[in-house]
Length: 429
Ligand code: PLP
Image (cartoon, rainbow, N blue to C red; front, side, top):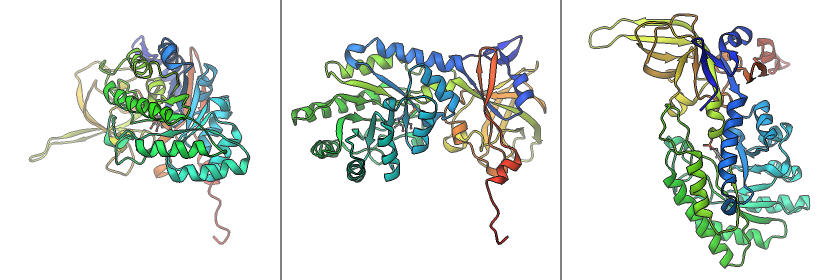
């Protein structure tokens, strides 16, 4: 559910007409809804709190990789949300947005010594260790800082899941985490070090997961590992269950409900006496954002011998602004901001980038469109702006946050001068 609705036929972001935003900010532009972010966080908070007996005082740590805009993070931080981070930059963003260090989790498969030192000094809640090599480096770094940071071992349960092979993280060949046997060994090594405080385990098996079954199987594996560790004399007080819950990109209702997800987690953790952590990214942000774009022109290709004609809707947003379709065949609904009357037509939705992969969708049935019309890629609030680039020397797409009837540009579109200033010319040129 989101807060982008039609008022008098025209799509609005909460109380703000997208037509006026396009006028004021230009296109393409990302637009986020405070009400949707707030609602999604609230739903998860409520669902998790309903199982306090099994999940403890659970931390919800937004996966910053999904949307790292400072105002989006600040919106969530004000609600009490923590942050799941994977780089020094993301930790810095979370802190700058007002997330306290003790609500920040530091994950990631390749943290540098400098990043580990930064995280320790920032007092993050826990560092999720993903390999033996990382554990060794972390012991050395922690000892040099004179601290004993809390750590969790990320388990790879050999259960991959997710909406596409490229967003699966828990399979046997995925680079993330360590197998169960190694996790038990690493936990023992961490416990033996005076420079670390092992507190638990972590797991994240993939993204856009639309069935609870693989998650439940993975969490049951975690549960077994907790019992083994305890039998070996270790204390385990936290379980980080990662993110990954899918969202209804197609407007379908077959994604698991947040309440069912929380109930499943509670069922698996029942009686363990651990505090759970959740790292939702997409779940909180995807439907809270859209990418507003304008039709540049329609390139009509007549049919020729053996080939159907094509109707290319050429948009001013390209794969550099919204990469998901080119990267992993992702689906985004396209909504005309003010639909015209008339028979629906099949369009190929393309951007202006000089790459064959700059195609958002083929044969999409839409009301008739004309050059200059505004359209919105829906559900673009997660893994949208964060993946944008300046490819083809297109200025980085701006971001707008709406709250009721007010709005603010929360990342501006750079001018060409600003873009060029970042590239000082070599002094011999
Ligand atoms: N936690 C970790 C460790 C991740 O790698 C990811 C995404 O890849 C997430 C959380 C967020 O996943 P999602 O956006 O699917 O909830």
